[in-house]
Length: 415
Image 1 (cartoon, rainbow, N blue to C red):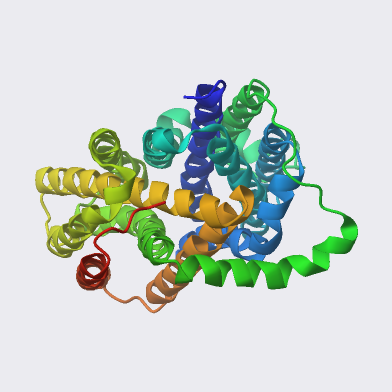
Image 2: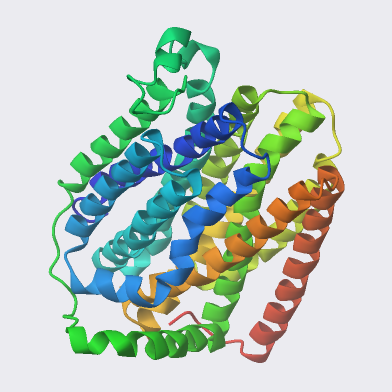
């Protein structure tokens, strides 16, 4: 691994840990302040919007500046967004600011990895990164659950005081303080990442050309057989994952009778599965054979369709563990293949921005649909079961098309 790689992993982990812990804290804050229940998926929706809106410029910006400096500043902006939420800003506005910082952070992070890591090590590097990402998502969720438990809440007198009236009265001040500390640690780790020169300058007169160029590059990556395949899989997977991040919390409350704090702990079992799957696949799947993991997605979707009907905690834990392992084995090779093809066809920052645009457009669609379903009070279990069936059928179709394409081009390689 290149010098500074594990400092980047540490910064990514701490920042992601805070991103997902604050989501649970904010959901508890919505409940405490008596906001509508269907606002919960809208928090993630507001967070994600900047990834789509800024996609044409985020990659170019990451290529035009020193990436380690940009990452440190974006962690500071995240801390500012959390402070604004504590100070009384509208929760959706605060999460939109959080998302703005995250959207500019992601191309710099992945661009640094792509520029610094030889192609032969990209699957292994992505294995480490995806382990870090998934651990931060799921352990951050569990950590957020701990922070919203009664043991962490501020004494009633302090919560009512609201710091002499200039902050909203909330029992969650210790939780928000812990989140701010994580962002501070992440920014400190960013300072130890070796600086790389800006890849290309970006004069002001060139900014208006970014949008048409972005759409051309997006179409180019989709038209590439291997790039389009990996982009389709990761786009669907991360939309599915964002929906499940919110839906599983509600599912655990409704189906397993768990409170929010304990429902968040349940997701830690998925982390163990994803880590195991990602580590296993990073060691055994070559980049040129990454497409062969597609059947795992079919199994994942079928298992989800069945697992959501259980009312037994033990079966739920086992099902989530296996689902996590299958997800890790699916997404790591696909993500590595997508980054490799994007790096070959486009600028590193731009290819990551295109990946982020498509994946987060899927997230917006999924979360918007979930918010509408929750507002209409549609039954959650049949919806999740239908989602699993749809995933299984979609990946089975991609598997069949890819096998046919590979049979027609037996000498195809990822180069």
